[in-house]
Amino acid sequence: MASLVNHRAFKVGKFLAAGVPAGLIALPINYMLVESAHLNKPAAYAIVLLFQVAVNFFICRHFVFEKTSSASLRTQFVQFMSGILAFLLPVVIIAGDFGEIKCGDEE
Image 1 (tube, rainbow, N blue to C red):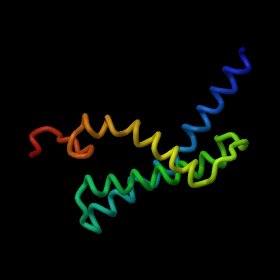
Image 2 (tube, rainbow, N blue to C red):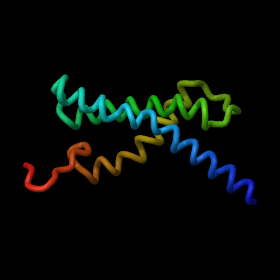
Image 3 (cartoon, rainbow, N blue to C red):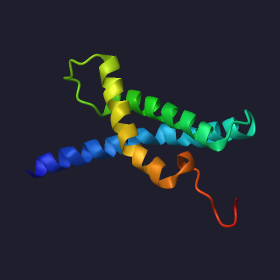
Image 4 (cartoon, rainbow, N blue to C red):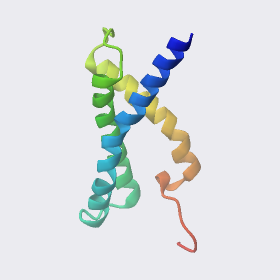
């Protein structure tokens, strides 16, 4: 039982670590899209979020996921993307304005 818990904890740690590279590049890309490309913040956030999920999928596929799956790359990607977006959808709905949260007296 302890080895199963350790195995799962190790996989969770690898999954969390796999998100670091995409997280590190998300802020500069988001800044560039808003400040240089003049996209509105929700559109820039949506683009960056999709990019992050794609990067995370390939990192997780190489380092985290079991290699025994017979599903195609496309099927695996769609399943991963669907799971992540289903998790994020309530956050977007709760936050409103596609995640743009107003601070202080900002209108």
